[in-house]
Length: 254
Image (cartoon, rainbow, N blue to C red; front, top):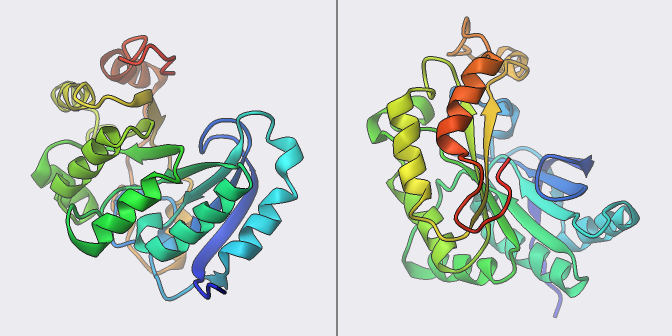
Protein backbone atom coordinates (compact mmCIF):
# COMPACT_ATOMS: atom_id res chain seq x y z
CA UNK A 1 0.00 0.00 0.00
CA UNK A 2 1.38 3.41 -0.96
CA UNK A 3 2.40 5.65 1.93
CA UNK A 4 1.85 9.35 1.26
CA UNK A 5 3.72 10.69 4.30
CA UNK A 6 6.13 13.55 3.63
CA UNK A 7 8.60 15.45 5.74
CA UNK A 8 9.46 19.13 5.79
CA UNK A 9 13.17 19.26 5.07
CA UNK A 10 15.43 22.25 5.65
CA UNK A 11 18.60 20.91 4.02
CA UNK A 12 20.79 17.88 3.35
CA UNK A 13 24.44 17.28 4.18
CA UNK A 14 25.82 14.38 2.17
CA UNK A 15 29.18 13.95 3.92
CA UNK A 16 28.49 14.70 7.59
CA UNK A 17 31.31 13.71 9.94
CA UNK A 18 30.09 14.92 13.36
CA UNK A 19 26.50 13.65 13.51
CA UNK A 20 27.09 10.03 14.44
CA UNK A 21 29.67 7.37 13.62
CA UNK A 22 31.41 7.32 10.26
CA UNK A 23 30.33 9.44 7.31
CA UNK A 24 26.64 10.36 7.51
CA UNK A 25 23.90 11.44 5.15
CA UNK A 26 22.38 14.12 7.40
CA UNK A 27 18.77 15.22 6.93
CA UNK A 28 17.98 18.52 8.66
CA UNK A 29 14.25 18.78 9.18
CA UNK A 30 12.28 22.01 9.43
CA UNK A 31 10.46 23.05 12.60
CA UNK A 32 11.35 23.36 16.28
CA UNK A 33 9.36 24.51 19.32
CA UNK A 34 12.43 25.39 21.40
CA UNK A 35 14.11 28.79 21.26
CA UNK A 36 17.60 28.03 22.49
CA UNK A 37 19.64 31.19 22.92
CA UNK A 38 22.71 29.57 21.37
CA UNK A 39 20.86 27.98 18.43
CA UNK A 40 22.90 28.15 15.23
CA UNK A 41 19.98 26.98 13.07
CA UNK A 42 17.31 29.55 13.90
CA UNK A 43 16.21 29.37 10.28
CA UNK A 44 14.85 25.87 11.01
CA UNK A 45 12.35 27.03 13.65
CA UNK A 46 9.38 27.80 11.37
CA UNK A 47 7.65 24.48 10.76
CA UNK A 48 5.65 25.81 7.82
CA UNK A 49 8.75 26.28 5.67
CA UNK A 50 11.12 23.79 4.11
CA UNK A 51 10.85 21.44 1.14
CA UNK A 52 8.39 18.56 1.23
CA UNK A 53 10.17 15.26 0.59
CA UNK A 54 9.05 11.65 0.74
CA UNK A 55 11.00 9.10 2.79
CA UNK A 56 11.42 7.03 -0.39
CA UNK A 57 13.13 9.88 -2.25
CA UNK A 58 15.48 10.59 0.66
CA UNK A 59 16.56 6.97 1.10
CA UNK A 60 17.10 6.70 -2.65
CA UNK A 61 19.27 9.83 -2.55
CA UNK A 62 21.17 8.58 0.52
CA UNK A 63 22.00 5.27 -1.11
CA UNK A 64 23.98 7.09 -3.80
CA UNK A 65 26.52 7.98 -1.10
CA UNK A 66 26.66 4.58 0.59
CA UNK A 67 30.07 3.68 -0.90
CA UNK A 68 31.60 6.49 1.20
CA UNK A 69 30.08 5.42 4.53
CA UNK A 70 32.45 2.58 5.30
CA UNK A 71 31.36 0.19 8.01
CA UNK A 72 30.00 2.80 10.42
CA UNK A 73 28.20 5.47 8.43
CA UNK A 74 24.51 5.87 7.67
CA UNK A 75 21.62 8.32 7.96
CA UNK A 76 21.20 10.90 10.71
CA UNK A 77 18.08 13.03 11.07
CA UNK A 78 18.74 16.36 12.78
CA UNK A 79 17.05 19.72 12.74
CA UNK A 80 15.11 21.53 13.68
CA UNK A 81 13.45 18.86 15.83
CA UNK A 82 12.99 15.44 14.21
CA UNK A 83 10.49 14.18 16.79
CA UNK A 84 7.95 16.76 15.61
CA UNK A 85 7.64 14.70 12.40
CA UNK A 86 7.08 11.27 13.91
CA UNK A 87 5.18 9.63 11.05
CA UNK A 88 7.83 10.77 8.57
CA UNK A 89 10.62 9.45 10.80
CA UNK A 90 8.96 6.09 11.24
CA UNK A 91 8.60 5.56 7.50
CA UNK A 92 12.08 6.90 6.73
CA UNK A 93 13.74 4.58 9.22
CA UNK A 94 11.57 1.63 8.21
CA UNK A 95 12.84 2.01 4.66
CA UNK A 96 16.40 2.61 5.84
CA UNK A 97 16.46 -0.58 7.91
CA UNK A 98 15.18 -2.56 4.90
CA UNK A 99 18.40 -1.42 3.21
CA UNK A 100 20.52 -2.27 6.26
CA UNK A 101 21.35 1.38 6.93
CA UNK A 102 22.55 2.58 10.36
CA UNK A 103 20.04 5.15 11.68
CA UNK A 104 20.56 8.01 14.13
CA UNK A 105 18.41 10.83 15.50
CA UNK A 106 19.85 14.10 16.81
CA UNK A 107 17.07 15.42 19.05
CA UNK A 108 16.58 17.94 21.85
CA UNK A 109 13.78 15.73 23.17
CA UNK A 110 11.26 18.51 23.79
CA UNK A 111 8.25 16.86 22.08
CA UNK A 112 8.55 13.75 24.26
CA UNK A 113 5.52 12.44 26.14
CA UNK A 114 5.40 9.13 27.97
CA UNK A 115 1.81 8.14 27.23
CA UNK A 116 -0.79 7.87 24.50
CA UNK A 117 -0.47 7.31 20.74
CA UNK A 118 2.64 9.50 20.44
CA UNK A 119 4.49 7.34 22.96
CA UNK A 120 3.52 4.17 21.12
CA UNK A 121 4.97 5.64 17.94
CA UNK A 122 8.10 6.66 19.83
CA UNK A 123 8.64 3.11 21.08
CA UNK A 124 8.17 1.81 17.53
CA UNK A 125 10.68 4.39 16.28
CA UNK A 126 13.25 3.30 18.86
CA UNK A 127 13.07 -0.24 17.46
CA UNK A 128 14.29 1.22 14.15
CA UNK A 129 16.90 3.55 15.69
CA UNK A 130 20.54 2.60 16.19
CA UNK A 131 21.62 5.78 18.00
CA UNK A 132 20.08 8.79 19.74
CA UNK A 133 22.19 11.95 20.03
CA UNK A 134 21.00 14.60 22.48
CA UNK A 135 22.38 17.67 24.24
CA UNK A 136 21.27 18.24 27.82
CA UNK A 137 21.89 22.03 27.67
CA UNK A 138 21.56 22.77 31.42
CA UNK A 139 20.21 20.75 34.35
CA UNK A 140 18.46 23.39 36.49
CA UNK A 141 14.79 23.54 35.35
CA UNK A 142 14.41 27.31 35.77
CA UNK A 143 17.69 28.02 34.00
CA UNK A 144 16.72 25.60 31.23
CA UNK A 145 13.43 27.43 30.66
CA UNK A 146 15.25 30.76 30.54
CA UNK A 147 17.83 29.40 28.10
CA UNK A 148 15.48 27.48 25.79
CA UNK A 149 11.94 28.70 26.44
CA UNK A 150 10.79 25.30 27.77
CA UNK A 151 11.28 23.09 30.82
CA UNK A 152 13.37 19.94 30.83
CA UNK A 153 11.45 17.33 32.87
CA UNK A 154 10.10 15.57 29.77
CA UNK A 155 13.51 15.77 28.09
CA UNK A 156 15.06 13.89 31.00
CA UNK A 157 12.20 11.37 30.76
CA UNK A 158 13.01 10.85 27.11
CA UNK A 159 16.66 10.12 27.84
CA UNK A 160 15.71 7.65 30.57
CA UNK A 161 13.22 5.99 28.23
CA UNK A 162 15.78 5.69 25.43
CA UNK A 163 18.17 4.08 27.92
CA UNK A 164 15.48 1.76 29.29
CA UNK A 165 14.68 0.64 25.74
CA UNK A 166 18.33 -0.26 25.22
CA UNK A 167 19.09 2.29 22.50
CA UNK A 168 22.66 3.70 22.49
CA UNK A 169 23.02 7.36 23.48
CA UNK A 170 25.54 10.08 22.74
CA UNK A 171 25.23 12.98 25.17
CA UNK A 172 26.45 16.44 24.21
CA UNK A 173 26.93 19.62 26.22
CA UNK A 174 27.19 22.99 24.51
CA UNK A 175 29.60 24.95 26.71
CA UNK A 176 28.58 28.63 26.93
CA UNK A 177 30.86 30.65 29.25
CA UNK A 178 28.89 32.07 32.15
CA UNK A 179 25.75 30.18 31.14
CA UNK A 180 26.26 26.40 30.99
CA UNK A 181 29.75 26.03 32.46
CA UNK A 182 29.25 26.14 36.22
CA UNK A 183 31.04 23.24 37.96
CA UNK A 184 27.96 22.57 40.11
CA UNK A 185 25.71 22.31 37.08
CA UNK A 186 28.15 20.08 35.21
CA UNK A 187 28.50 17.80 38.24
CA UNK A 188 24.71 17.51 38.42
CA UNK A 189 24.67 16.63 34.74
CA UNK A 190 27.34 13.97 35.24
CA UNK A 191 25.29 12.48 38.09
CA UNK A 192 22.27 12.32 35.78
CA UNK A 193 24.29 10.74 32.98
CA UNK A 194 25.41 8.07 35.45
CA UNK A 195 21.78 6.98 35.84
CA UNK A 196 21.59 6.11 32.13
CA UNK A 197 22.70 2.64 31.06
CA UNK A 198 23.33 3.03 27.33
CA UNK A 199 25.53 6.14 27.12
CA UNK A 200 28.38 5.41 24.71
CA UNK A 201 29.86 8.85 24.39
CA UNK A 202 29.88 12.24 26.13
CA UNK A 203 31.06 15.32 24.23
CA UNK A 204 31.65 18.94 25.21
CA UNK A 205 30.87 21.23 22.28
CA UNK A 206 32.39 24.72 22.52
CA UNK A 207 29.82 27.47 21.97
CA UNK A 208 30.37 29.43 18.77
CA UNK A 209 28.77 32.44 17.10
CA UNK A 210 28.69 31.15 13.53
CA UNK A 211 24.89 31.08 13.50
CA UNK A 212 24.39 34.61 14.81
CA UNK A 213 24.01 36.00 11.30
CA UNK A 214 20.89 33.85 10.82
CA UNK A 215 19.22 35.58 13.78
CA UNK A 216 20.02 38.95 12.22
CA UNK A 217 18.72 37.82 8.82
CA UNK A 218 15.44 36.81 10.51
CA UNK A 219 15.19 40.18 12.26
CA UNK A 220 15.78 38.60 15.67
CA UNK A 221 17.87 39.86 18.56
CA UNK A 222 20.77 37.49 19.25
CA UNK A 223 20.58 37.03 23.05
CA UNK A 224 24.18 35.90 23.60
CA UNK A 225 25.81 38.79 21.78
CA UNK A 226 29.09 39.69 23.45
CA UNK A 227 29.77 36.22 24.85
CA UNK A 228 32.99 34.76 23.49
CA UNK A 229 33.55 31.07 22.79
CA UNK A 230 35.15 29.16 25.67
CA UNK A 231 38.92 28.93 25.91
CA UNK A 232 40.63 25.54 25.56
CA UNK A 233 41.17 25.62 29.33
CA UNK A 234 37.44 26.11 29.96
CA UNK A 235 36.62 23.21 27.66
CA UNK A 236 39.17 21.00 29.41
CA UNK A 237 37.72 21.90 32.82
CA UNK A 238 34.24 20.88 31.66
CA UNK A 239 35.55 17.67 30.13
CA UNK A 240 37.27 16.80 33.40
CA UNK A 241 33.82 16.73 35.01
CA UNK A 242 31.66 15.32 32.21
CA UNK A 243 34.09 12.99 30.43
CA UNK A 244 36.11 11.07 33.05
CA UNK A 245 37.98 8.83 30.62
CA UNK A 246 35.40 6.16 29.92
CA UNK A 247 31.68 5.75 30.45
CA UNK A 248 30.01 2.86 32.25
CA UNK A 249 29.76 0.87 29.01
CA UNK A 250 33.58 0.93 28.81
CA UNK A 251 33.49 2.67 25.44
CA UNK A 252 35.69 5.63 24.54
CA UNK A 253 33.89 8.89 25.39
CA UNK A 254 35.86 11.57 23.65
